[in-house]
Image 1 (spheres, rainbow, N blue to C red):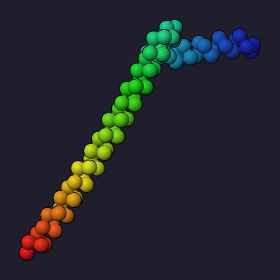
Image 2 (image 1 turned 45 degrees about the vertical axis):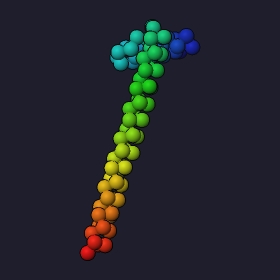
Image 3 (image 1 turned 90 degrees about the vertical axis):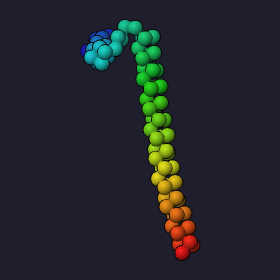
Image 4 (image 1 turned 120 degrees about the horizontal axis):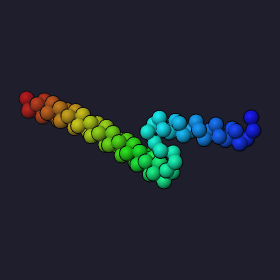
Length: 78
């Protein structure tokens, strides 16, 4: 195969894959904007997961400290 044939095969394959994903490979600026939006969305979801994890840990730690405090108060009150 010549380099031109390889290039044609690769371009066709990439275009077909993008078309199967619902993306228009001919409009590169639109495709780039879609991918930028997807990246921002992914990062915001990851950040939300991080905040959720931190909140759960905080609630568990607060409950544990509260239980220890109540135990101490009960022990000292008797």
